[in-house]
Length: 262
Image (cartoon, rainbow, N blue to C red; front, side, top):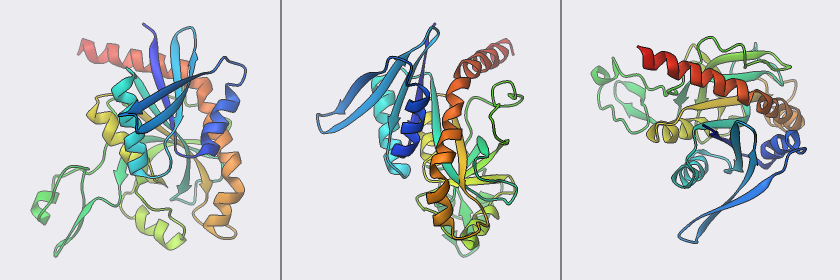
């Protein structure tokens, strides 16, 4: 059975990097609309064993959620990949390093109570510290990465860990350090991963977040200058994942087979 894979990019630079990797293939345009008001253009490529759809959502969780929902309501997508750039939350990450999501934590969805601030899984509500005791605010894909080194091979250092996400461009070292304190497994911060995780899980579709570092925790200059200087390099590294989609689908099929035998 041919699988349908969606690559979602927030920025034009990210989408352009992916399309550049695929320029030798025949690319078709697919138009989607909602009530003839909201329109979306996807790029479509058919391979021997899967179909690939690529589109740009715009930055931020709302744009990502709206775009992904529109696609999933019109196309029978089997796998969602959010591909692009992020900021480092740890000094071990350098420009061009690749981060693959094990979990996603939304940093701007929380209850601010007298007992403290409590992060929540989107859609949940915590009203006291007792309720937060056994509450896990993280989102994860129905696909567990586990031992997946066979397809997570880039020409860059690759890490698997938590991505923190919210509607904020994090432009100071101090703010990055605050976000890192939310999770000892946090590697990077972006603006779309939590929306993709929430929507994909609601549709019961596996997802994977692939982010390349475009700005370091402690840059030589400012975080903004890091981002502007290294954006193109980072998007190129992220787009390299396109070559690994066949291996990802094999890994996913094997994972499904194992779960079905349990």
